[in-house]
Structure formats: C-alpha cells, structure tokens
Amino acid sequence: MPLWKYSIVAVFFISLSFFLQDKKKKHLEYSVSLQEEKKKILQQLNQEQISSESKNHLETFKEMQRSSPVLQQANYKVLAGARPQEKKLLTMGISSVQRPHGSTLLHTLQSLFEASSVSELNCIVVLVHLSDPDPKWLSQMVTNISVLFQPHIEDQELLVIHGSLSGSPVPGDLGHTNDSAPCEAVYSRQKADYALLMNFATSLSEYFLMIEDDVYCTPKFVSTIYWALSAWKERPWVIMEFSSLSFSGKVLHTSDLPRLTAFLLLFPKDTPTHLLLSQFRLLLAQHVPIHFSPPVFYRVGSYSASEDSCFPVEKEMVFGEPDNPVASVLTDMRTVSNVIPQYAYVLNDECYSTMDPLRGNTLTVILEKPQKVIRIEVLTGSDTQGLYRLQQGQVELGYGPLPDAEGCARYTLLGPLVQGNLDQRVFYEEDTVEQLSCIRLVVLASQDSWLLIRQIRVWTQPEEEER
Image (cartoon, rainbow, N blue to C red; front, side):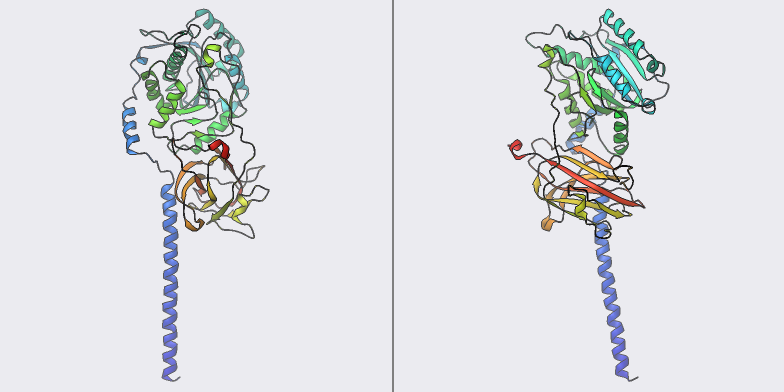
C-alpha cells in the first residue's frame, strides 16, 4: 500500500479516536451534570430547614423539658383501669368536664372503640381525664364508663384518671364565668385540664393524640394515623392535624409534651388554647400546618351558650372536584411505549407507567402560570389492590419558575407518600404573596418493579376568594 494511503488511514483513525474521546467527554459531562442535578435533589431530601431565629427559640424551649413547677405539685387518682405494661404507639388523650348541656364523652368513647379493629387497639391507650371536682359527677361517670367499656379497661386499652393541682387555685367553673370576661374561665380551665392530662401521658406512648369529648371517629382512623406517622418518622415535625377542628385531631411527640404543658401555663388565662398550639408549632420551626385530608374526626353535639363565643366557628372546607390548571409534565423516568408523562396529570382514566424507578428520579408538574393551590392529591398504584405503587416517595412544592418551563428554582416539602398516596392541604407562610409554580414527585428509594402514577389532582383557590 502506498505511503499516502497509510497516512490517510492513520489520520482517519486518529480523527476517529478524537471524535470518540470528544463524544465520551461530552457524555461524561452530561452524566456528571445529570448526577450533580440528582445530587442536589438527593441533598434536599429530608433536610430540616430551620432559621437561626427558630434555632434560638428551640434552645429556649429545650429549657422547658422539665415539667412546669406548677405540675410538680400535681396529684392524680386512677379511677378505672391501669397503666399499660408496655409502651404504646399512641395515647388518645381526652379531657372531660361536667357541662350544663350534658356530657357526650360516652358517645365519643363508643365511636372510638367501634371504629378500631383489635390489632389497632393493641397499638393505643385511651387516657380520659375527668377533670371536674364534683364527686357525685365523677362517681356517676366512672360507673357508666366501667359498665359500658369493661372489656377495654381489662385489656388496658382504657385508663380513667382525675388530676388536680394542689396548692394552686382551681380554674374557674364553666357554669359560673365572669360576665366581664366570659372566655377567661373557659380557656383557663381548658389549659389546666389538658396540661394535667399531657403531664400524665408523657411515659405511656411514643405519640399523643389530642381530642375533645365531643367527636365522632371515622373507621380505621388509627391505621390512617399509623401510616402517616410511619411515613413522617425520619422527618422533622411538631404537630400533625387529622381534622379541621380547632383543638381535636392534633398529634404530637410525647417527648414534646413537657415543653407544651409548660408553654400552656406560661400565658394569661384569657389566651385561647388553640392559638397557643399554633404558636408552639411555629416556635419549634414548623412554619406551616401538616394537615391530612379527608379528616378522620368530626364534631358532634354543641357547646353551651357561654362557650360558643369562645371558640372559632368550625366549618369543614368543601373542595368539590379538582380543577387541575393548565400545566406541562416532565420526568427523567424511563418512558415506555406511547405512554407520556402528561397522562399522570390529566383528569381521566389515563395514567403514567414506568419501569424500575431510581432514587432521585422525579416527575414535575410545571404550571403554566403561578396558582394559589389549596390541596394536592397524588395517587400511585392500581386502584383496587395497590400494586405498582411508589413504595417510598415525597411531594414537593416549587416556587420561582425557571425559563423555558424547565422547573422551579426552589422546592419545599409538602409531605411523603403514605402507602403510595398523598392527600394534603397546602398552606402558605403568613404574609406570603408567592404562589405555587411546580409540583414535584420525588422517588426516595429505587424499586425493581413497575410504577403506576395513576393521577395527580390539584385544587386551586377561586379568584374571588383571593381578594
């Protein structure tokens, strides 16, 4: 072969080598870029975003870990039942007092036990604080509870106590409120009664559920709370809300109860208890409520005339059907066949399916224009058996839309999926004017199976309500 031909061949192979190296380099650069983006997403997972001011508040509240000096003088009498031998998952705390219009406590307890299976009852203890000092009323209530719920008392699922603060003035009687400050006695007594209740409950379980003595419980509410707690176990939170009621349906860590009881008793008598709960959450750096839908507790009965003016009107929000605003959908998951990511967002029977999702994969709904979103529901897996659901995932809210509809500049956590689904109210920090621009579903753990994203449902606030 002539020398010039060898030269051409040599030049060809050298050029090919450079081409392949350049292509490999670009591929590596793309891979590195993709990995960096995924790394950012992975770094955002489970991060606790606490401002320096909130950290200072947290340090202050750590000083409140010890029980309030007032509660160190608390006296308790067990009226029925006994402390469980083992620590439970959840204490359901109910404080009940004699009311002019009659008690609904027995109906609440009946609803609670009827709505719970045997396995669910094994995870809980119901702690009832009969706080009224009237011995005749106490005796009658204990008799009624013992007769109606004896099996639950014997199984250590129900414990009835009476607590008092020795050496401290008894809070005002609900039936004899001061005309000049009708709510002062109501709030004062409620704070003292629940402080006594929570002070007793600190060692009974891992979590504490606060409910009043006039609620109706939906079936399987214990399982609903259990799965939510499991999904949130590794994430920071202070209060979870399982109803729209101002006081009932709040779940806390029992480790926070000493701080909360001390916090409640620090404030003047006329400070509403439900407002203090919101302030407690804010001071421990949970800036927006964690509110699950649909609610599992509803109020029955009514307050007395003297109490009605002291509590906010409890109106359950009616959402109606979702109104998914116009949006595009992007994903880095493997798309199969002719299935497109948009199928996850359209409100029909279409759904988006993919194979073997990887940790850090995302599916992002990018709204055409920012919206005031008030509720989001994400459904994965088959409707009937729950197959092909996302085993570990979370939903994030995006703000600051990027150019060319590529996503959002920053994201905050709405919540993890609970058994493959999420249904939560969306709240905004006080005084914020920024609206939502993205909704991002993030895969938290790789899974070797099909994934079916059945539907992403969005509710927005009507414009006339925003004014």
